[in-house]
Length: 489
Ligand code: BES
Ligand code: MN
Ligand code: ZN
Image (tube, rainbow, N blue to C red):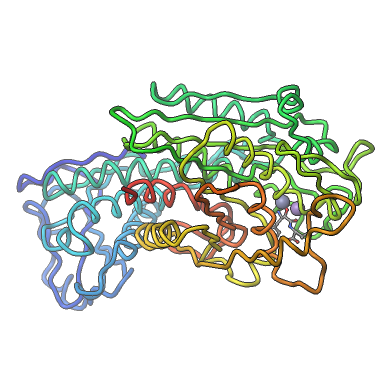
């Protein structure tokens, strides 16, 4: 679907379908000389997400689709994204090849103003039209090929451009998540990252192979990869800003392209879902997809340790001890707690080689966070109040909410006292599996400002929200990271 944005000049271009938004208790505004039959609007209440097709009596299109927005004073960016998501899926199933989305002044001035509305509408349109196609030999072609928005001015258009880039980045992230494990190995992930560097002069990509990892002493990452024939990769993307940099920030993403649990094998039922265990790394790559077209005044680094976690003769066994890049010896009591191991070496690499001011890692780290927080909200562990508040606000802005959970030194203490410096899990009576995972990671970040986002619940099969959710990957994290950069100063 090709999406363009034009300023509204009083006329409506010829199209298959005109889409208009209606507020509760107000007559929806129509563009140009589009006229509806008298009765068409009478009982349209403008309830949120209500959709109605109606024929026109005059004007540039054959049909109009009205989408409700609810009460004006209650309208949020999330409401706008959802309405746009409803609009685009209705337009697709109507068979229209082209559509014009009319956003009048009254609507554009709500929900944070024209720029925010432009962003939300574009995100909703792009994300709401997403479908995973890469697994089909002959994907059914999509009908809706061209959508243009008629917008009320430059602020709206600026927002719309941004929303389009964010929406496309989210779809890129979802395409990575949804790929089958054999169709997205660590090597393929690395070539996807190299592809991102080709999209922008300001992005470069370095890939460290297993020989490089050995030189760095990344025994934890190599220990996870040992049970797999697929070589592990450590991907390092760098974005350099146009002008003077206001700071260096690193995003780190867990990239298990498949997690069978290793020798501590997972049960068969539902194991296919562990192809999504690379969702953190997909979010990071997606952020660089967005950075290819959105300027930020920071030097941004994306670090992705990528591996499989399988069980074979060379696999790490429960009780084995591996040595991390920072010299820490770790007893691997449970080989299924592998995310924290590959992240540990990636975090050490980030702290010692990149030296950023702030690190944000994203990982499908624990099943416990799904129990605790469900599928609508990611767990957040932040080392400073400032970072916690910035991420909370960024999450509210973009509809990818996060909820604070505590970093507790007691959990790290509990991991000490075995034959090595630390064990990779706590003893069972501790409970708090997500807190334990975060506590382990905290051992590898030193004093650097850091937040860990546990996205195991939000990364796939979340509640359907019109523009995202339902079966498959959600692309969570990508828009959150860019919104965080947008808010940071
Ligand atoms: N990738 C899983 C976490 C996960 C589980 C994500 C279910 C989404 C749904 C992770 O590597 C894992 O296996 N974690 C273990 C840790 C435990 C062994 C301490 C878990 O959560 O059970
Ligand atoms: Mn695991
Ligand atoms: Zn895992």
